[in-house]
Image (cartoon, rainbow, N blue to C red; front, side, top):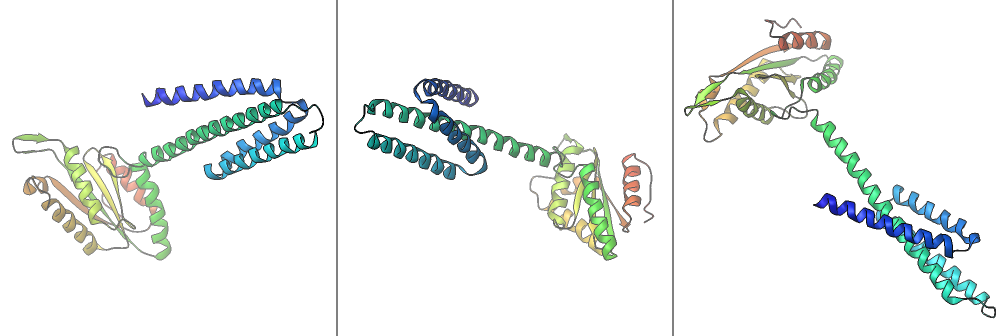
Amino acid sequence: MKKNLMYLNFLLITFVQFIFFYLFLNFIPNILKLYFFGFFAVLIVFTYLYDNLKSFTFLIAGMLAIGFYYVLIAWIRISSNFSQLNSIIQQLIVAFLGILIWIESVYLKKIIDNNIELEKKIKELEKYNPEIGVLTLAEFLDKAEVIFTAMKRRKENGQLLVVSVRKFDINNKSKTSKTILKLVGEAIIKSIRKQFDIVGYLNENTLIVLLQNTDLAGSELVVKRTKDYIANISNINYEAIVDNIKIEIEEVGNDFAEFKKFIENLQQGEEVYATF
């Protein structure tokens, strides 16, 4: 309904604009058409470059200048056969056409801005797994490369958590691994340092967590916080969930190429051991 209404408004404005443009071509003297076309062109550019208030102020200033011009012409030609009615009609045509052009320019600018904003949101959503809410593997590796570059420069090491979840039964109902994987993902996100650490989706039942500039004690602290967060969630069987979660801790150095190879082998389900 809203879409149809917007489309109808756009068609109506365009139709009325064509009518006034026809009147403009037939009533405005040729010597003035070029100046008014220039004003309309500047108005369109001004609307796209600046906010609505500034462009509307420019529109009003232009209308006042045009009105002042016609008053001046009427005063100069007061003794001649100057038609004031024709002057008023010309002013109204230019004024209404200018307003319609401004409205349509604002409307189109809003559509363009909304499309740009939607594209940004889509790109942002593409970085995250829609079901689990953590980074996709590609985005995880992109961010990991930046982290490894920083760790290598600072001569630091990191830790990798490999979190695997199995299917299980709770309250006589079968819960899929995705449901618990999402819960575990939320728990991990709450437990890590969001400015430094990242969580990614490896496969349908495994998450990977990269902790930078930490040691085994730091990794164990994250694991403890994750379990504590899960334990505080109501209406779930904590033991049933924890018993079906396997968390492996691997120490990583600062060589991203080796790390990426390790992750790729891990994704393929191979038994691998960190050799960083």
